[in-house]
Length: 170
Image (cartoon, rainbow, N blue to C red; front, side, top):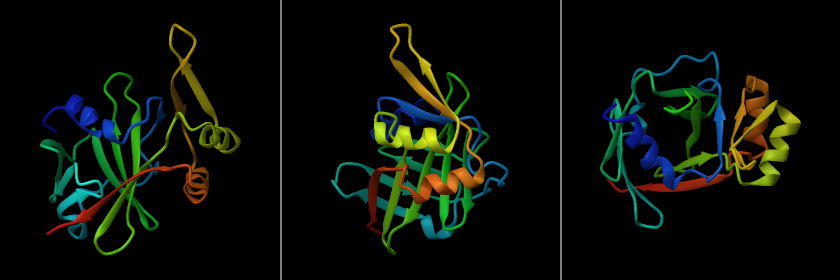
C-alpha cells in the first residue's frame, strides 16, 4: 500500500462523521483473496460524475490515490458479497465496505453510517456495540464484533445503508 493514511482519506467520501469499526476484518474466519477478481477489473465513474475508480488485479485507485491488497487492505468473498476491509491506523480496527454488482456495469459500495440512529439501534439489537466517546462526551466511534450470523442479519436488514454507485465505463 502506498500510504495507509491516504487510503483512509480517499475513502472519506464514503465515510460517515461517526465511524462504525469492526474488531476483525469481515467476514471473520474467511480467507482474504490474493487478487481482486477479474470481473471487477476496469475503470468506473461514480453516478455523480465526480470520482473515478480503477480496479486492477492487486490494486485500486480512487481519484489518484492507490490502495494495494496487503495485511492492511483485504478483500473477502462471502455468499454473493465482497468485503473491502481497510485497517484504520489510529486504533487498528477495520472499516468494512460491502461491495456488489447491481447489474453488469454498476458497482455498489456500501458502508455503515454511525450517524444513522436507526441503523445503530438495529445494531444494538443484533450484536454488542461499544460506543467510544471523545473527551466532550460525544460518540467518537462505534466498535462491533459480529458473528457471521449477525453479519448476515445486518446485511439483510440494510444496516450497510450508505451507498455509492459506480458505472463501468470501459
